[in-house]
Every structure is written in C-alpha cells, then in structure tokens.
Length: 351
Ligand code: AMP
Ligand code: TRP
Image 1: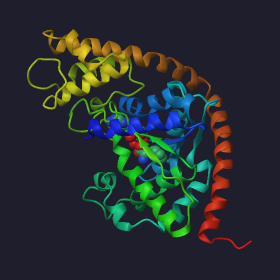
Image 2: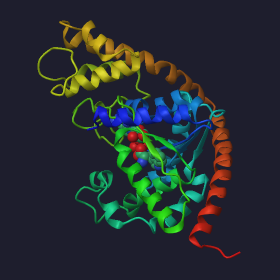
Image 3: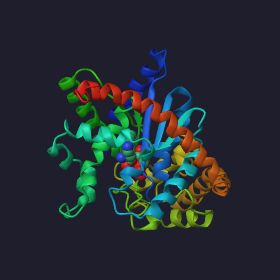
Image 4: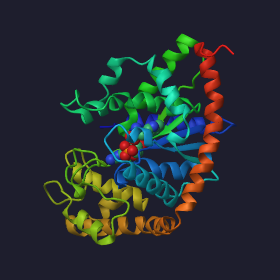
C-alpha cells in the first residue's frame, strides 16, 4: 500500500523538476495491450498522461512484446493493440504533443533488453512482486518472458533518456529496478543512461477491486464485476457499483478501517475533482445507497465522452494506424541514436 508521504515526495520533486528546467523533461510510459482497459488504468495512469502532456516531451508505448509474456493469439494481440491505440486517443492523448507507438515497431527495445540482461541479476528478477504474483506456485511452467519482463521494461525507459515515468503504484518496483540497472551499467561502462524517476500520484495510483478492496483492480481478474471497463455501458456501470462491496456500518467516510468506502470515495473524488471531505459531508447521514447511486452517475458521465470518441475512432481504424506509423518513425529515430551510444559504451562493433 502506498503511503501519502512517499507519493507526496515524488509529486513535490516533480514540481521542482518542472519549474527548474528550461528544456522539457522526457516522459515515457507503457501499457500492455491485454484484456480490458479499466478505471484503474485510467485513473492511475492514462488520465495523468493526458493532463500533463503539454508540460513534457512525451513518449507513450503500447507494449505488445510485454503482452507476449502471457499466452495470447495472433488475432487477440492484433485486435487488442488497435483497440488500445483507439482508447489512448479517445482518452485524450494528442499525437501533436506525444509520440504514440507500438513497441515491436522499434526493434531497439528487444536489442537493448538483451544488453541490459547482462547487468541484471537473476535474483533481482525472481524477487519482483509482479513475477511472484503472476508465476504463483507454477514458476517452472511460466514463460521465461515473465521473468525477463522488467528487463524489457528497463530497456523501454532507458532507450529514450527518460526523466519521468508516470505509472500506477504497482509499477514502482520495476522503476526502482530500472534505476539500479542503469546505475550498474553506468558504473561498468561509463555514463550512458539517465536515471528515471517514477511519477506516482498521491491518489488514484492504486484503484482497488470493487469485489475485494484488498486487491487492486486488475485486467487479469477473472471476475468482470471487480472492475469497471472503459467500454462498460451505463447499465453495467450502475449494476457493478450497486453491488460493489462496502464496509460494515453505514457512514460514507474514508478511513483505514474502511477500505471499500475509501476506494469508492477516491474514484468519486478523482472524477468529480472535488476533495473527499466535501463528498463525505454531502452524504453524512444519507447511507451507502444514495452515495452509490450518485457515484454511478459520476462514472457514467465521465466515461461517456471518451466512449463517444472511441465509437468514432473504431469506425475509422486508419486514424490510429497512421498515428502509430508516424509514432514508430519518430520513436525509432531516437532509439537508433541512443543504441549507437550504448553499443559504443559496451565495446560492441569495431567499424
Ligand atoms: P497494465 O494494465 O498492467 O498494462 O497497466 C497500465 C498502467 O495502469 C500502469 O501504469 C499501471 O500501474 C496502471 N494500473 C494498473 N492497474 C491499476 C490500478 N488498479 N490502479 C491504478 N493504476 C493501475
Ligand atoms: N509493466 C507496465 C505495466 O504492466 C507496462 C510497461 C512496460 C511500462 N514498459 C513500460 C510502464 C515502461 C512504464 C514504462 O503496467
């Protein structure tokens, strides 16, 4: 669980970076084209990417090579990739302010992953929380890609001299590993990589499951009622919120012993842009029913404009395709230049 102190510090640091610098800081983040994009992805990551995009030099990547770490099919991966591109555009990423591209279109990611694996310890990878969660007790059978996943993520980030990585709380450990890998590389081969910082917001960085507020809302949750998908229709959203678990008692308050209400109030607050205290005061003595019904309205109306844009983009797949072709070209130019430096640092290539 993230503490306000930690994330607050990162947010403050980010403010000072923004102010003290004349050149814009480089932002890089990625998202997997797997499963259903949900409210946690939106509030923990994409909404921040969109809100901050004018302030930074941004690169956003649909990480289809990461998605290969779990079994998928050709058709599913292709469909998910295009759908996700449409979702990112519908949510407000603007190709004139941000490079948006698909990871496998820039081969340097895979190449750098291998080079970085030489300065990554097996023990570091085996200890990653995400690996342990996903591998469970079946670590003999899961793909080696699941173990290697954070090395590829480090390659994504380091390839672009990234300063800031806006992500949800679950990615903090991977960004810390990326910093360790970069520092070790720099120590061994000379100053080559910029050490990135995670950009994790104080609220919304860990949206919890509607069915179990001790678990994060996750694409891989088998229970569709645990999360609100960006594409859920209004009736589905209302039903899921109505049946969302609550805490004992009937007060609409956020508190450590009220994880379910804290989660619902956080969602309400982020979408309505009102402080939690104002919302708590509004529902004092009114009980969970009235609160949930209004929360459903807030979610439905917040998602409706994104859904309308998404429906239009789905009708015109050529728009996303051309954004991705252009994005890959721009990302590739930067990646190729960086790899010349990396190969040279490592003593690869004599001509
Ligand atoms: P993924 O779904 O793993 O591809 O994650 C894409 C982005 O969404 C990452 O920055 C994650 O940290 C973020 N994210 C995923 N689940 C949540 C959640 N439940 N709450 C907040 N952020 C999340
Ligand atoms: N591992 C990230 C996730 O599951 C996705 C990701 C891949 C990423 N490469 C990245 C995020 C680089 C930030 C930066 O959410």
